Image 1 (cartoon, rainbow, N blue to C red):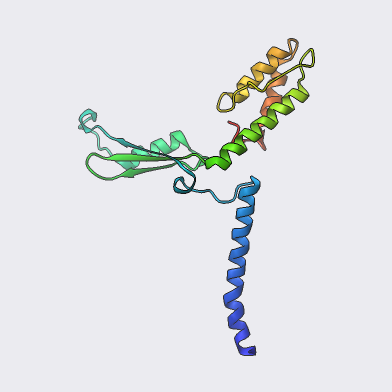
Image 2 (image 1 turned 135 degrees about the vertical axis):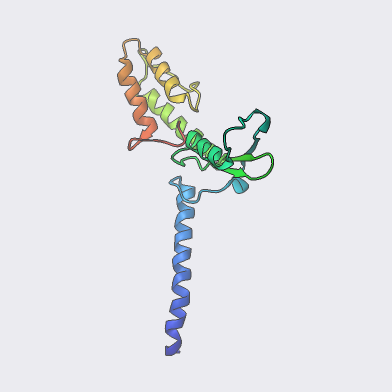
Length: 183
């Protein structure tokens, strides 16, 4: 048995290490701290395929679908924060495929919960002149932080708009980076 101990450890230790890594990533995903970035096939999403109209292209320019895909990627998701895949599809006519994952039900629930926490904190920190502030109607999404700033400024007539904007900014950003789920 002694001579097989090394061989057994060589086989078992990598399996245990891999199991630990997977368990930690799974726990982080459920805990809301990252983890696995599931693809569109597992969590749902949208796949857009755009076809290039060759009749409207200038004849003197050399067109490459790879250049178009790279330009779209720089424009849509330059820091790769949203897991958007943009790739060229060769053929005649050339096409570009854009894959937009939605994140599934778990991510939508998490986004709503985080936004509700920000609204609750806004009601606690900025209760209004009469103490009856209600920010529950402020929409979540790309205009949410600006709409919340407007709602707080409207509730507080004497509020310094820059101070309100800085407060909202601090609640929707962490470490100088935008929170993915509040922008």
